[in-house]
Length: 518
View 1 (cartoon, rainbow, N blue to C red):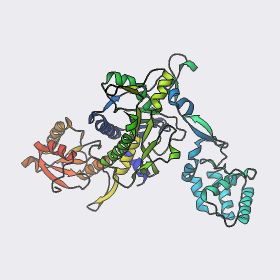
View 2: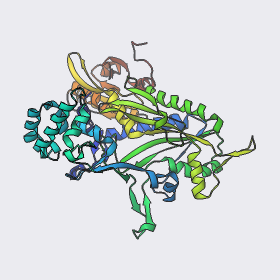
View 3: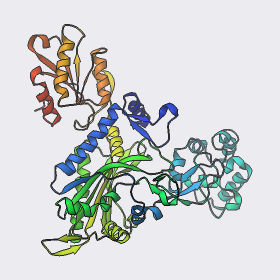
View 4: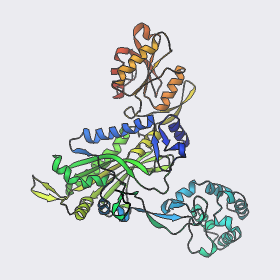
């Protein structure tokens, strides 16, 4: 699918807007519109019901966004929550060092350069014309004679060693006195990047009237630490026994240097996290359980294509405290990226907080008469990333009856609007009948009433909103008190008594087959 089309539809239909757009926006922040807020709320509600309400081994928390700064010292975020950053010496832009190559491949100047060819004449012409506009900082543009001479010398001395695209652009970006260390150029202007340096990703703030070192605090970069800090409180008050989990849905904040790919990488985002506490000797079994269960949850809610996969981390990728981690990944239009991580965290977090706080965070097993620090399995999902994945999966362009349409084929549980109610025309009592049906159904479902425009246009608007069913009051309704129900995906229509339409909709939303499909 085309990501630009999805972004356009999200704006046009009120799913997602740039934050503070009337003032030019602010990079890395997004606002959910009337349909978007319902979609994300449905995702969070489905997650909460399935992982908390439907289980007898899970409780919930809602922890504060600002916590005692020592929490982040214990967790390692103050000392180690950083990304390697490089600054362009020409345009002064900051970049995550490990993302420079990916961003380069997406940049206009790099794509233009690759399309030019590799012969000296073409490169010289590009540098003199397009290069000056697109990549004024590139060494090839600033010093074409020297760079092309160097490239020709390499071709003469190493004719049997072809240069891949990455090495090629490094040659074009590196001055001759730096031959021993080829480097990638700035994705923005092609300029020289500095050596990487660490940049802490936490947002700092101050608590109280005086902004000094003693009042420094942080917006939380994850929701997990609030769960660990409250472990003893939950054990003492929640009547829970290991194995059990604590779930939380809430906002987190990371000062991403290069937020990108629509809502995927943002500075403010929402997490859906579980910390599941278990006996050390049972932790491997619980890890496999949560790994498989969480993958199936996405499948059950509509991510059925071959774009969904689960990837186990190689030993070299694991955190020092983890014995196993898996990522549930989705193939977005911009590439395969993580939706959720499931990590076996051992006893690291509780042990760290026990050490820094001086409080005993062990668990006493009444039956076995023993005390131990539980191991933790952490399924950590992004609500915004999930919403984006469901949007990408649902986006469909098809043709019905010779007419092209755009439709969002959401799972009914996630659809922002469950049904739309229409009068066929604005006369003969049809609006009054449709409004009566709407009032009745609003008590049970999010529904939408629309009487403006031709019926076909109203159907198309609801297709783009992802509404599973449309209910139309028409001429026949006035004679036999039945209404037409239309299915979003197949566009099939059938009639049901108006008095039973709410029950019929409930059955359809719960997965009952539409008439004729039994």
